[in-house]
Length: 485
Image 1 (tube, rainbow, N blue to C red):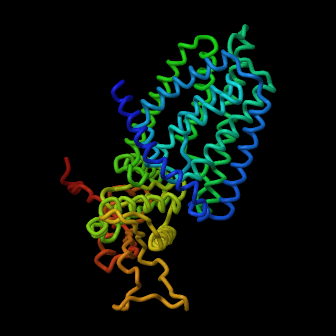
Image 2: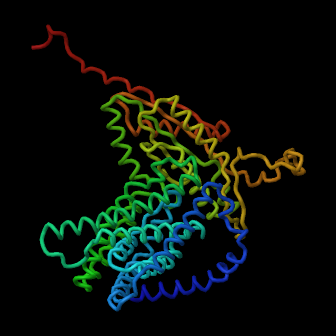
């Protein structure tokens, strides 16, 4: 346990030493920031929230009362517990974040922000949030402007909620009487929920502005992420109460936070594929089986879409397996954006993806498949080649590069100058059935056969097929009535 913490500290020190020159170079060259490549509404929101958050923090620091010895003692106790949580759960948190590249990510470290805003004055709350965010930077692996925006939204939410808690007069600690103590506990939990809601609203709006075609359900976060926010509020309230009444008991909350982070990561590993962020094969079969059973009862149509990346082995052989992983992540991102909330998308195995479309007939399924094929065909995936040099892999239907006159740029063989990088396309097979005899096995088998037909017919296309109706079982032979006894 302690050896793992020691090696984590050494690794963190090494990463800090490696990142310092890069950070200095980034600060000295603001024009190179990736922020300026984003959409204008997103840039305006980022800058506005950062400025407002900085203003709120400055006002909170300037109007705060002098810090006392108890305030510093509470801060040290919370920092120790937060440090235990961050160190012992960093690998699980890193794994969980790796498969959640697109939607907002909710961190169990919010427990300590809730406890801080309930107990600590504004300056120490800000200091705790900043320290926690600096440690989480090496786990998040986000662009600096996004991480700074997330930090600003957390600081803004924490300071505003702290002001509200002080204005209402929430009492943390010894509150005699069952009714009064219950009321205070509910107020503390409500403050934690308000903190999470403000932060989630700011981050959700940012996601919508940065990716307009992102479904609203994805911007609002998944059920698991919202559950983390909901559970963090009462845990933060318990940590605050324990800090005031029995400081050593905060270590129990720290252990619970570590267990929650590890459980969330393990549960996600058992449900989701790490490279694509989609469901894995076994989880998809379980959830798809329930959806098929519902379709059987309601006699609704149901479709299965099999998606196979064309010549995926050639991508791995030419550019290396990291490039192949980048393509898989891009395909997973497309499926999350282009499917509905009730659809079930998964990585079936290798470069094969599968989507179950409940309440979807053949025309709707074929239209959805064509839309997904076109979006994938226009992808642009930044990655590296086998020598580590940056390269951008393109979809086979991406716009051709043009010269100053607007004419396509061709090489000596008459091909587009980036023809070697046009490697991304998919073949899609679609199967649709309805009625009480629908089965997941038959839909999957027919969609798989349709994929092979699409690949044999030239790839980068959609093939639609239907399961053959099963012949009714023959009736048992019965002898004529006069022969029966």
